[in-house]
Image (tube, rainbow, N blue to C red; front, side):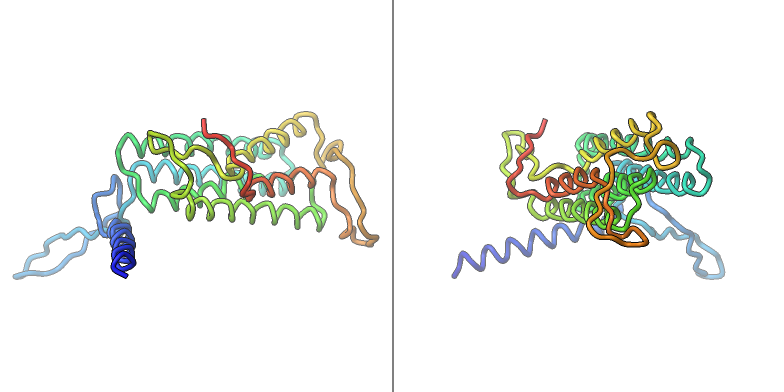
Length: 255
């Protein structure tokens, strides 16, 4: 009974420590404002912190999300203008996001400023750059049937589930002597850049909807006047990749 109480107290202490991080105001950058209060007939400026706990590593992580967001906007511009320059920009931004995703951990260790907030930011930014952006790119180049979008939506959701599981179970993964996890449980979501690279290759060859058409052919599961029963064979690749991301038995060694 005593051991159970001690474990419970330890868990509460850990949770309180994590939450106390949000009370600190020693972030590397923050938004401030002037609050004027009259005292004895004079106006004295006071600073009130509006955004707390944003460290330098968090800024690098946010740039990852910024790149993913710009990829989405570039995809939208391509759809409205049919200007291939925007498509190439959309294909390039996730790669820039990977660069920021690589360096945010380096900066956090350099500044010794890892935080719970940074971990959550990293997952959200990864979802945009390596989950939503690749799926939208696949839609943009020509995988646009109703079943295609079902598979692409599932692809995004599997990326979301993979990131949530990582945050919840990272402490349970075996560690090496330096404290780093020995392996990834399931494919890490940045691996979807392999699919972005494939889409870029097809774009270079002109194998996109606006030119020669997307490769692989179409499977018709049921007849429909609006084509809702059609799915491209390439979606098998996206579906398999999604399944690999949420796999519990697939262990990918960390470099």
